[in-house]
Length: 294
View 1 (tube, rainbow, N blue to C red):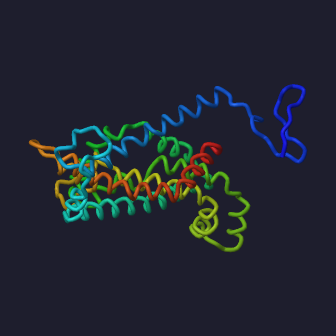
View 2: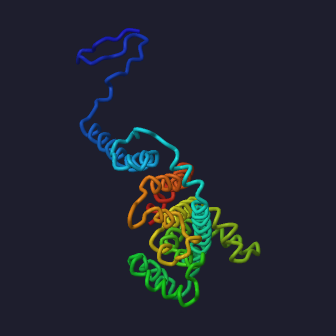
View 3: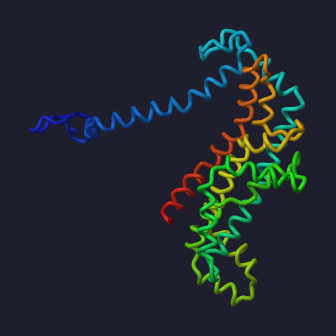
């Protein structure tokens, strides 16, 4: 294979050649873009690297900012895993996150379907009222939630932790936007075939909005898995602690066991990473399509 220079001095392919080097110029804008993306990626990854590094250190090395421990050890992981409380907190978080996710997927999709496909007076007012709750900070709702839980005897119960998140305004909005794309002809054909409204929703409409259901389930699960403020307020029994709340018990007034906190946080991060790695395409697809349909 030979390469020749044309009249303009550009590198070209010789007879039978396939040289394509230098055909695409390297633009300064592209260099800047990739540099910023690289720096942004490093910035996002460094806290995780530092967390893993600290979890492998002895207590006297915790405040050493080097990323490579001088004496790496797995004793912190052995201690945390042998502590029966950690598995209890893990199961609590898994139970609460799963139950809340199933509830949100069911109720958010059902309400979104009704607001989208049923014509009745006041439905727009109801929809706006639901969306308006998104403007209320969670911190302002903690006191009403606590008074409600206290009145009904829900303190120190699983239900007391879960009830504020059993249905979400964001999920209702997301599902309504997706149900807008479901053709009414499909629903009318199902009614002619004798299906009731619940069967139409479950068998016809729901399979057509699978990306939205997947994205909603992932968001809700991750949000409840990492929830801290409300579980901390509503529970005093350590057997009901979730992982984020339970990890705070490794810090006391006299001493904070950072190596144990980082070890527990590393173990708690594994489920969220697995969820994101396996279902990231649903997250991206669901959010992009929701934006396009909005």
